[in-house]
Length: 168
Image (tube, rainbow, N blue to C red):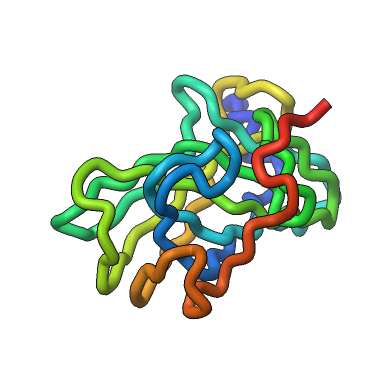
């Protein structure tokens, strides 16, 4: 009988949904976020098993974009309610959901981009540390029709109180 990879018997991936996106000028969230863009991202574990979200070498959160003016990359995440910095691996119990404000820095002009399309890819697994083989990352596409500054009334994201507070 052939061996089946451990992830084949594991639970399904978390569900990722991407909300608004706004330009983040300056250090608008303590010393955690720098210039770039913020996205409101909800990650939900719809299974009956605990899962972990990873962000470490070999298993990095990846943000892609289609803009010729910028090149987005993942910088940090804070809990959208508490403002605490999300540390990885991040545990997500059965049925739990976490909304994070994900910061994607950019190479290039961080001006107001008319429209950004791309993906957010989050590595995950059934153990606190990645063990080979790991399941494919959870991926969500997004379209951000304009990126108003976070301080603008046109921005749908509200940074949480004490944004960027270290857990502990």
